[in-house]
Image (cartoon, rainbow, N blue to C red):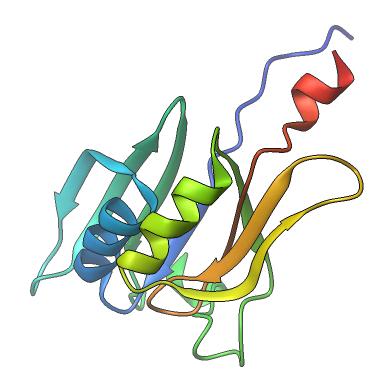
Length: 139
């Protein structure tokens, strides 16, 4: 069977999705691609871009999908983290700090290559931004 191209797009839920959108754009450099309002000042669906990557998010809600997920604050912390390749981890970290991101692992040059740092967003999700790109390392 021939290999098919696949794209993975992380999907997150936030208690305050509009605040999350504002923070992710300000702190991490995302831009709004699509934002669909929901009832009662919620976000039904949003797509944020960073370069040629995307993350989707929405307000936590009592829906079929929402009942399958937990917010980081409800489960004692995130069960996974997101890794984002950036061209300059130092500059990105400075931007995130300026916007109030909680840096939980400071900038470090890794033994396997690349430089990265890890932070939490305003609702506790774990994000690592670094220069190591596994696709380019394999080429």
